[in-house]
Image (cartoon, rainbow, N blue to C red; front, top):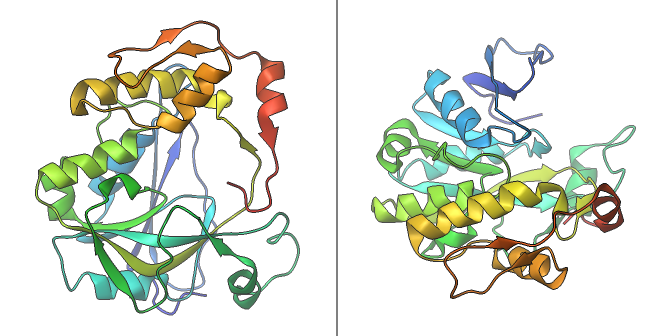
Amino acid sequence: MSNRKPDCWVIVGMDEDVHPPKPCDSIEIITDRVDGTGDSLPLAEARNHAAQLSPCNAMVFLDVDCIPSPTMLTEFENAFGQPDHLWMGSPRYLPQNKTAGDWTMDDLAQSAISHPIQPAIDIGQRQSSTEYEKFWSLCFAVNKQTFGKIGGFNEGFAGYGAEDTDFAFAARDAGVPFGFAGAIAYHQHHAVCKPPLNHFDAIVRNAEQFRRRWKTWPMESWLNAFAEGGFIKFARESESIEVLARPTRQQIEAATVCTPAGF
């Protein structure tokens, strides 16, 4: 469906082998896996490993629950005219069951919406930004040299939360310009936990690590929600988080909802 086929497709499974379907075109496919410890997926390690495996200099990262639009790769390729940048794509969010049964790209384009806290960048547009905290790693592009200059993803972050903001802040410190490109990908709907109690331990652990490195707290809205729920003692001026109670399975299930756009 893409107007520009990838030169290579690199897939890294986390705690599992991956067996992708063979594309219609003769695209080189590289697969591997990384295994985490405990119950946290090795997100940072998986992205770093994918970068190491890539034979291409220009790299596009896309989360497995996203569908690339026909123009996504072309838009990122055009953005590589400024090769030293970190470019975030423009994810659009689909309603529930939109990819069940038969569908077309036009169906997705007409029903998907932008996230309210991210800029809506259309096809053919690019926008430079100093708001590195708005970088999300579900859809982005960077070349190998710049990825190395940033230092890759910090593998000290295990599981969900803060590893992408840490990567963006490292890019800022390395003097790598950041911006948004009209490279649209469609995020498939799934239930969400609000607040993300299902990632409680990882978020608390990663937030404290981020605070030690950057002297500021990430994910404050989630941490505040954890505090309001009686799970932690947290204040913006504090240097650590006191865990008061971990969420039970029942509490996690009660917080899991199917919002209209999956966020």
